[in-house]
Length: 200
Image 1 (spheres, rainbow, N blue to C red):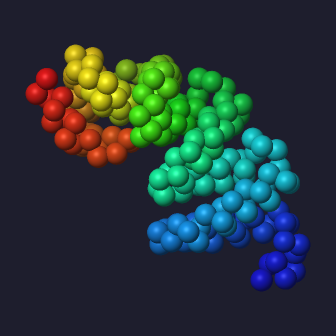
Image 2: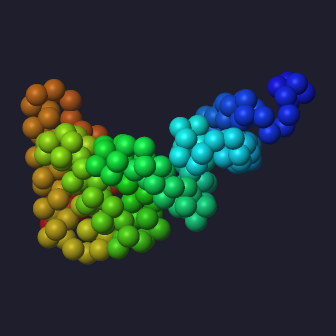
């Protein structure tokens, strides 16, 4: 409807495309969502700077969509761009940057690019510790991701050390809130890996 009134690349069209793509995404109709997100990104990039919130939002959604479809090579540059946008907007030591770093590290881990993922996890860990303190759930989650990465690299001693620290944080949090940390890390279902770490 908007396109019949506005030009096909009008800035307002991007919002409609983004909303429709989100609907298809929620219904797991990824093949229909993808071209809409791509078109929304193209329109927003034409009207806004590369680091604007509107562009950043579409980049995030499109990157996640690519990842869900296993199109990791297409997702990677968007995750890199998301880190760069947040660094420019908030500075390199902001928790939002750490979250973007973890997302990129998870993607690298899924591609078995462990040497690229590890420094990102470590940097995110430092930012979370400096921002929230050493016993925050975000710290524990990042430690778990590092533990899984080290386990996959067969560095079982370091993996166990990271996992123990993550578990200690979880137990401390449960003492205060009676609500434990999920047994699922941001890199996916790691229950089997966690069980193996407990036996190291």
